Length: 287
Image 1 (cartoon, rainbow, N blue to C red):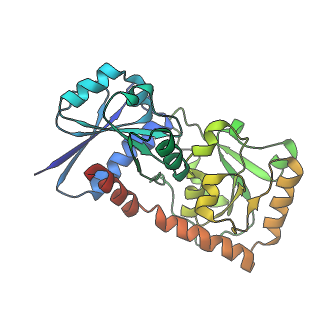
Image 2 (image 1 turned 135 degrees about the vertical axis):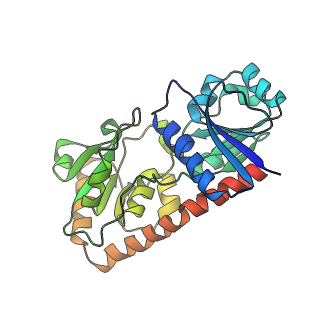
Image 3 (image 1 turned 45 degrees about the vertical axis):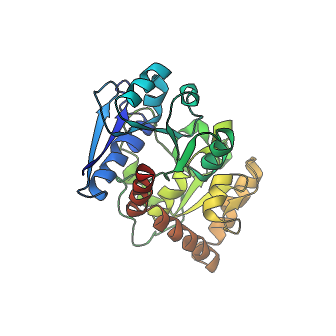
């Protein structure tokens, strides 16, 4: 019997990051990797769906209310609610559904705060549009890829870190070609509440590019992936500490310390390979 899964997105937000990556791209990985026993579709909110596993992307889940969600359940669907870096929508307390975490910290937190709901973990995948990593990086450079307001940047730090803006609100591929220029990625954030459950996507990107990364030692998700002995964890987000960390990383360029960091990053790259993500997805959907 063919098993069905419908990835559902909010058509008002087709280009936002969570829609593109956890909807369009993840459904593409599923279609390529789940095999002939599965029928995978990527559909807008409001489409008629019956007898399927419905994977609601973050914005789609936010648009629903309890009546909408119950209607999907009555149509013979099982609901999987992707929360990414947010809390589950309020209606999930009253409607039978499975909550999907995209990070280890989110999985732990939501399992504790929603003990009467099944919670599954599907790690965030690496953007399949990434270029192949270079055979080697010719010189030391530090790059920050992301929304500028999220990073712990000052004018002095920006003299050492090149900022490559990445919008999560609209589709923009221009930053991808710049990835091959930077052997060290910058992930020191201005901390906000939702950072505690964010997937370590910056780390996954760096790992895919054969690069090291600077991340805060207080970033629980980063440390869960890197290990607390990773050589490029930063002890604070103040300017002096960040500049010292960059200088120390530059001083280790090409050394055994640098190679130890790359060894950890290779492990991360293997753990979020497309094959591993698809296996996680299949286990979650088959539970």
